[in-house]
Image (cartoon, rainbow, N blue to C red; front, top):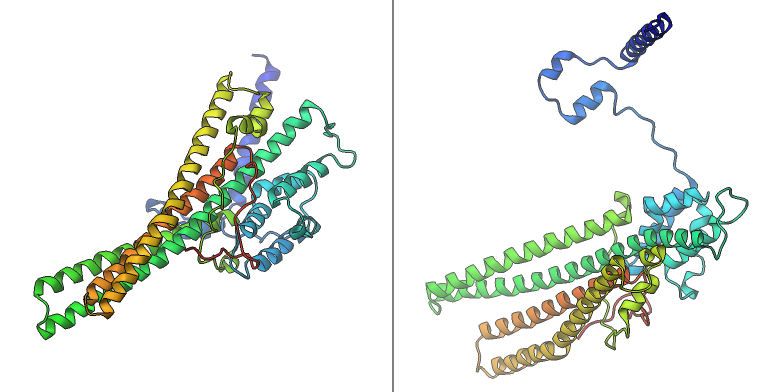
Length: 404
């Protein structure tokens, strides 16, 4: 080793020691003895000054987003409202807007202005905005249209936006269904409590046995436990949706519709689901895959067929429950009511008929929720669009119509 190299190594070592000494001198002191025992996170943070920071300045985009979220969450949250809030607040979307210099308050106004008059859903409006402004002006990374590179870029942007949009759709339908099911469980618990209270009164008056009273009490306890679990699931589903919407705590107090959207009037059939997936799936477009002859094409086709079959199965099951099971349950309740009025049935039979009616309704909601979740998953597999799909049937105020 030459003398020059030795001097350079020695200088580097001295400089490193000085830098470390400087860092140690400028850092907040923390007692070494305190490290003998694990400290709470907050305690350690205070001791080293980790919690002392200046709040980030909020941009005009932040303010516009908060105002838009407040406007959309002032009434029952629709799936369209959830999509808009979630996509505008999503860090991935904001990163794409930052890349093109459009994370501004005016962007939100532009994307939402006149949206009710245009048929395109919000995610496609956002994709179009990102791509049009991506090539606006004299950017160094400008990509000419009608080129392979532009197609690859479009596929990547569309995939990022659509993946988030379909995740929000799934979470939305799960949250609405969980809330509706929780309400039905609460009604079942009320009916079970009524039978338990009646059994108590009859036992005290000597018209019911101790065994019958105990059976009614246990049935009420089990129903109540199921109701509590359903309420917890509704809270979990709601918070999962909140997480995707990135709402601040003060913004997260919003109402969901009481019911899921009605099923489509016609069975949502697709003539060639494999061809739709290969023609629209971003991965297929990026790789130039046009058939199932490659491993990627075979996987895309298999996923599309599986998702399509699950959606149709869920639709058929929900429709059968609505058109065949619910009417029978209603007839049973009506007939039991008539028999009770004629003193041919006791009150227990009437309450049990009501419970069976609610159970049938709960099963329909579960099946309808499975359809809408499968519908969102199919849209994801097909590249964000289902041919002939016009979305959920809603009333003029954006709420779902009542089910049978």
